Image (tube, rainbow, N blue to C red; front, side):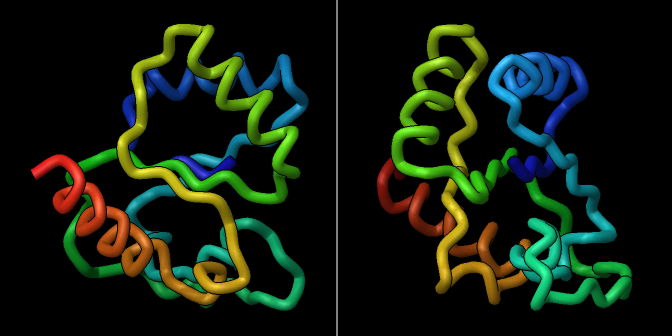
Length: 119
């Protein structure tokens, strides 16, 4: 589970949930926003560039769920909801398409979708 731009109190709640479900949580920091999602997720064919991101920061939280089966994803999202953790509006699952995108590119795409859905 990759998380971006999230305050520590919420990270702590999600970390506890992840521990109960045996899900690895990775907090991504602004200098890493230029890395591909595949590299951040630890997919072996993707290499980290280790070039600090110099673009704008994220104004919203983002969460990327990586390596979940559909059943595991259902369990995770149900447990997340039942735990009463406030929602993350920008979220996605890792796909063959978005694993090549940088975190910043995915954030921009999800932000646009969110604006279209919620105004």
